[in-house]
Length: 216
Image (tube, rainbow, N blue to C red; front, side):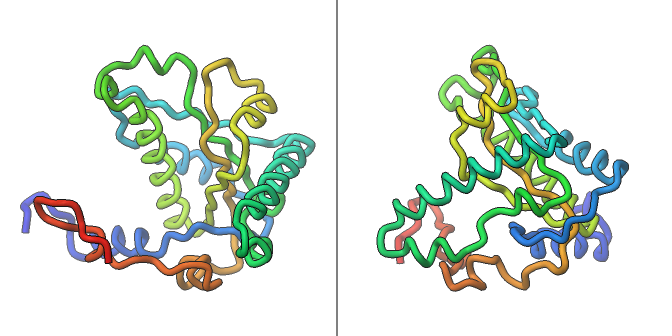
């Protein structure tokens, strides 16, 4: 055991919140108190980032008309996604894939313009700005679960449309609509597993040593 390890009960809490985090689609309205929202955003802001570039921008959507327009766009993209699903289109349309109108808080996460100026750690892998922003989102997700609030990541949208709706500068790119708020209950298992859409693969299928994992 490392001398820097947390106490056993503290480690258990960390692993519990990771295990019980869920991508939520069903929300119960309500609100997220201002102090809680501030803590969640601070947790996101503490995420690691390549070259300490902190490539995350958060836009809180409080205008009802704007939220309605974003929902309409997401719903249109949902239908286009269903068309691309082929024989699973009807099954897909029965899934609840977002909670844009139901959640207490809607946050848009975006990458800023001017990212090309950050070379540290990105010369050969420029997508590390997105990886860093994803770390911030995960921090927020875990903190929200610890506070008892659900969060869902919506990615069914055209970035150009969302950027235009939020008056983003050229070069900025939205990467997530985050639905956040109270829920009646957390899913026992990932929702897509509960709905028999897919099954998660075990870790043993995805880890190998000195070579690429064999497909099973």
